[in-house]
Image 1: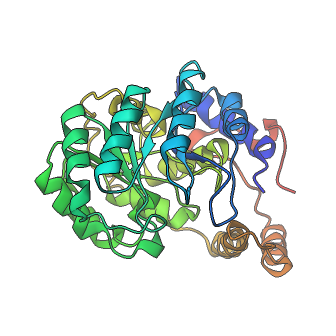
Image 2: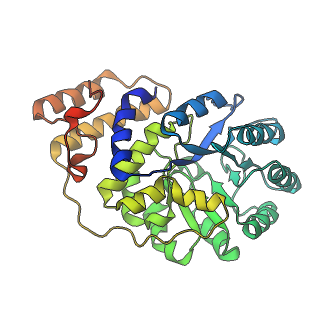
Image 3: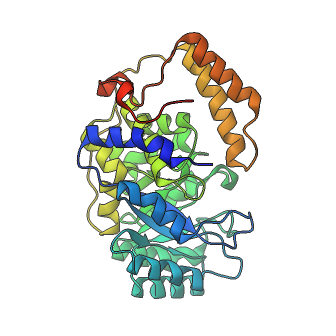
Length: 341
């Protein structure tokens, strides 16, 4: 469903305006046994990264029979990728989890992935204590699934950050259930980060307006999106929210690169404070209907002709001509390869 070839010219235009961007996607999966039926092959990931010469952290989709072989596959793929991929170890609490971490690190992994819902545990599980001890001492980033089906994870995350103050804890999917209040506690947790792997622009705009840019990491959640498609969404929302080019380049990859290299993360200043121009009602109608169509597609359903047709008619009736970056980057959309059909 992701037509990267259609949006790639828009992303190339944006990256050219920023200059010297190194894309590092913080959240991609591979695997073929997830009970959801969703699959992702290694070739799919590499093909998605190649047009933008991007890098990605890679870890397994859900594996009902355990993660030892899946983690080994990711580590071997990373070792053979000439720096394109960085393996993370997916594990569950307990003694075996620590064993998997040690095996993964020996094979070259540089971080940890915890999926609270599909693997059925909480962030407060005492079986994670040894994992957090090791991750803190080694400077490993720990990516935690924090999507809506988990329920609130923010309180647990803050408790973990207080107990392990040096731990680089990354809440995936904009920490969607908790962002409305959790952003106020970000100053007390200097190593708490958020990734952008969520499809609705409103959540990304809220993240960029509430959380300091140094705490935000570009992420696609492949196979649910792609590095090209979601890097474009992340970058456009960052521009619109008021981040400057240096901050956007850090979000798109530079900051995550520092985390996987166990370097001290950059402080890139506070969240933007400038007032945003209000969105016109015609664009609100278009956006609302397109997001409704996209949500159905994310669940594997048809988008529904009503929402798409209404967006199209509203765009044509208003005379609105989409521009990939708006007025902030100047220039004209006429030179772009491809157009909205």
